[in-house]
Amino acid sequence: MRLTHNMYSLSIYKTYKNRINDESKASNNISNGTKLNSAKDNPAKIGKNETLKIQVMTNDAASKNIQDANSMLQTFDGALQEINDNLCRMRELSVGAGSGALTDEDKKNIQNEIDSIKKNINDLANNTEFNGMKLSVASSTPLNESSTKTIKATVGSMDDENIEIPFFDVSCENLGISDLEVNNLKTSVGAIDKATQMISKMRSKYGAIQNRLEGTADYLGNKDICIQTTQSRIGDADIAEEMMKYSKSQLLVNSSIGLMAQSNNFPKDVLNILGNVK
Image (cartoon, rainbow, N blue to C red):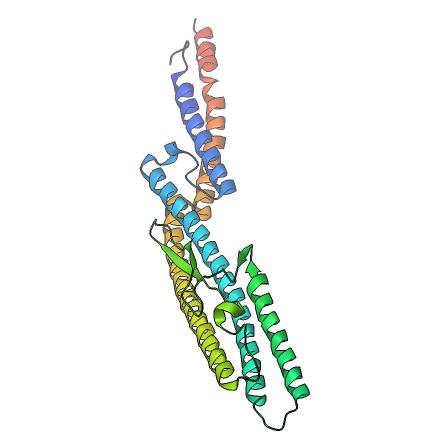
C-alpha cells in the first residue's frame, strides 16, 4: 500500500470520470434525439449524415416549388375554363342571331351581350394572376396558341431537374374574336371555333404539365422517405438504447463514488496499523 499516492483511488476516479462523460453523453442524446451532436461522436459518419440532411432539405424545397407551380397552373386552368364557357355562350348567341325571325333590335341586344362577353374575356386575360405572375402575355402574332414566354420551375435537387411553364396570350385580339359581328354568322362562328380550339390546346398543355408535376411530387416523396430513413439510422438516437446506457453509467458512477470513499480510507487504515506496531 502506497501512502503518498493512493493508486487504487486514482484508478477508480479515472473510471468515474469516464462514466460521468458517458452519462452526460447519453443524457444529451436523449434530450436532443440525435447521436451525432459533433464530429467527434462518429468521424466516419458525420459527413454522410450531413450530406443526407442537405438532400432532405433540398427535396423539401423542390416539393414546395412543385406545389406552388401546380397551384399556379390550377389558377390559370380555372380562368381558361371560364374563357371557354364564355366562348360557348358567344357561339350560342352567334348561331341564334342567324334566325330570320329576329328584329334589328334583337340583333342589337345580342351584339351587346357578345361585346360584354368579349370584355369579360379580356378581364380574365389581364387580371388573372398568381403571386404576380399573370395568365396572359402580349403577343404580336394573332391566332397563335404557342407561348410567347416561359419560366423554369425547379422540381428536383439537380441542376437540370426543372420544367418549363408556358404563358399564352388569351386576349380577344389574339384569339381572333375582337371584331365579331352578329350580321356575319359564318365568319363569327368560324372565329369562335378557332378560339375554342386554341383554349383547348392551352389547357391540354397545362394539364400535361400538372400530371408531370404530380408524378414528380410522388417520386420526390418516396425518395425523401428513403433518404430520411437512412439519415435517421445514422444520426438519430435510439432512445431505448440511450436510456439503458444512461442507467448503466449512472449505476457505475454511484458505485465509483462508494468505492472511492472506501479506498480513500486505505492509507488511514495503514497508518493506524503502523501506529499500533511496537
